[in-house]
Length: 513
Image (tube, rainbow, N blue to C red):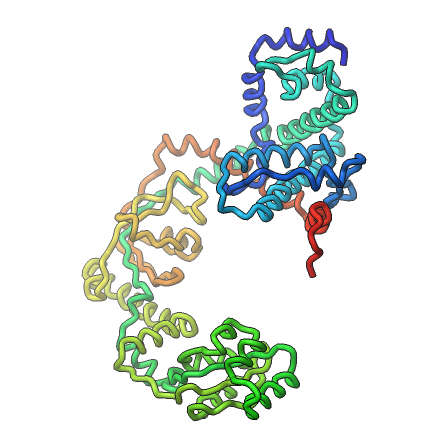
């Protein structure tokens, strides 16, 4: 680039380079949309010697490809630039407790991902026929950090830069300009149709507030819990056992069982040596196990009964488990559950919540149906009192599935009473906005509770808020487009990832697997 062109460009600017850089960021804020946020973690100095040693003769390291185009690291590349920038960010938040090796790999991986996006965007920009003029590149070079001195362009620095480095910088600037133009074209002009805005506004305008009661599953009555336990006592017998899990085959398990029988080695030592589970370090000791829990170890649940029939000190034969071959030792014989014991009832309740949640749901749905019927006879407040439930009111909100209208959240008073899962329930909004005045809804199941609503009041969305809906829809469409574009760019069919292999080679690490 001719010196006079640089002088001419600089004269046109007439402003500090820091201002120019800030304006550039404002002009294309979406350039950084796909940058993966680097966790605020520590770093010690990143050692460059492995890279320098492997690239001493020039060349590059290929970490993958996008549609056949290499994602490569070499001195002066976009990849190298990203790696240096991320390393600097991490170094500024240093914490001596962080593992250096894993952090180094993290920095390289973030740079690799950003470069993959960069390559993908350049391919798309080229296909779209985007072009950056030489004059535009000249203007951008005036603000390039390598050519700045005291915040302003230095012609002396520019002239002293080697030709190969100038060419590399010019290439980076061209690519950045193409990328910026691509994102501007993709997003900044994105508009929503008038009809779409009218539809969304109409959907958001009717707002309602409600009185509701929630019947949480956590309040499932103790007598119901005990009744289930007493009707299913076999599930809650318990036995104290140790086990050995062998995954290599039945033959090895049989050999271990033989050593136990011949007292060639203790059960504990064999467990520590051969067992492949979390109990191995404790000599196989599993402690007390309930029948329903022990059954999960077997594909055929009835095999668990053999363990419950063992006497103290007995060792089972080799049993086929769900994840291998099992050998059990009985450390204390099986005992029946005492359902007058609160701790046992807690176990039964936990079992119900995990394996029999439908039973709990049925109980509260029936209770909610009764409340809803009674509300039509004696009023909502009286029906709630009969059910032992405390009514709660909501603020006004529109049909707001998945909280798409962030400006009008579903919120109860107090906020802690808000049923969090309601915003994800179509059933909730369908019931809520179908109710007439004075009606109580049918039961609405919301994850871990059943809710009944009655309409409190209705109003139109305030005009001041309604006026913001057009801008909100433009923003939402923009965000959705960004997410869709990111998914398209990171399509595994297009992105061939060789990061782990290349990083291991770069740092001389052993291959995994």
